[in-house]
Length: 503
Length: 109
Image: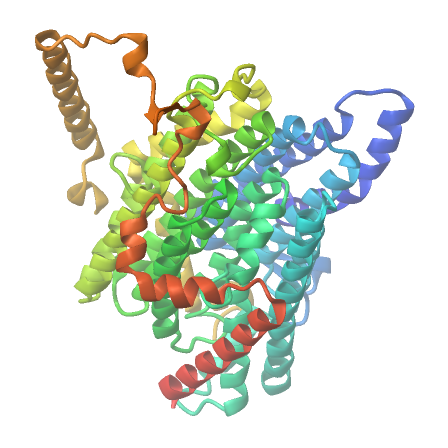
């Protein structure tokens, strides 16, 4: 492991964000082309290398705790890297790097790019901090850093649609973070600690006699997290935000940012509250799967359809994690494996939609058609993503969805498995329409001069498509990441003993 | 455990083999019945008018109209409830919070 890697993966993008406008000024003064883009990509590659250096240690069975300022927890702030955190950190670093590479060409026509990359790096720093921190108040702070950056990025193009979507996201997202802050305040008032491990240890002492204040605190926390995960009925910010944001940002929010919410959904049943929330997770997961896919079926807008599928697919993950709390050992593993797969192909699908928008200037199904011959690589990557999200074998989406179907059977709920299979069929129907409307059919007169997107946009799309195929053919690779993550999430006693030395 | 349940390599080989057989059948069919396409036959007409390629597009909202008909109550109430009005959405959050609170209270107590 690279020394100080846990803190460096947060500090690098954070300081990189503040330094990006300076790089922009220097680039303009000395006429350096693509300096800001190269700087942002370099920062992210460094972050990825540092996260990857921690992975063998964690997968080797060790638990990394990093004490800031040498103060031991629960008095000082610590970073905690277990199997769950490392999966999330790897996904954030890897996918964000690909999104920034994609942005280099995609955002070329926009102005204020140094601010754009500053905000992107700020969001990434927030995401990293959220999944690595061992302190619940720090979690709130990093969540706000991530959220405020996201609101600004959604409204980045400053047209009426994006400003409206940004404001909606701001109001609903701020309500979510405020509920989490209120929950943390109540938790601190009752328990007297902010360290997640210490909270977990002290809350187990209550046993069956849980004070009402703690129940309210948990309800506030669950609601706040569900707003961030965009589970029905807290999902309403997502469709507008993902449609109006620059597509590179839609890919960032659909892939890496989805990780943050699901990370806390996976922690929720065990730490810090350790109270039963399984029924809520299963109910919200099912509701989101069904409503998300049915809303997606009738959309006229490419990105809006993908946005509703984000809600539906996150429903699978929340359902899987919820089933895990009812004794289905494959549940949480399936949910976390699906997170890995979904983040990959959903980012790729948004990139494909962005590629179409980049060349045609439209994201309306009724205005598109016959692009398969003009943009064959985009069409192929979209097809791979569409088949993967629909759970068609042998792609990665099938492996994780199949695990969730089995979890339904394991939990003794075949009806849940039946609903999950039906939602997959409807997902396929929806993507059939999208592929047919955009890439098939006769070539339009106005698209005669259209050509494939630049190579720097194709590279991340192809890399993700290859990942979809490899993980589909060798699902053990995914299970080797999701398995330790599931074990770490469920091992709250291990987390507590590693951070503060036992209950 | 996953290896015992699902063997992706065998499944992929089976999918590729089936695709190859299907393609072979298609080629055989094309040999038996040869299409004789003339430019006029390839054109699309509606009420005597020739259509441009961009006009021959299935309406994306009505693409799955049978599903819409079957699930009419959903589309009538749930889809129309997505009004875009922020205050309504904030009300959903409050109602959702109350439901979560009640469920947790019932589960814990």
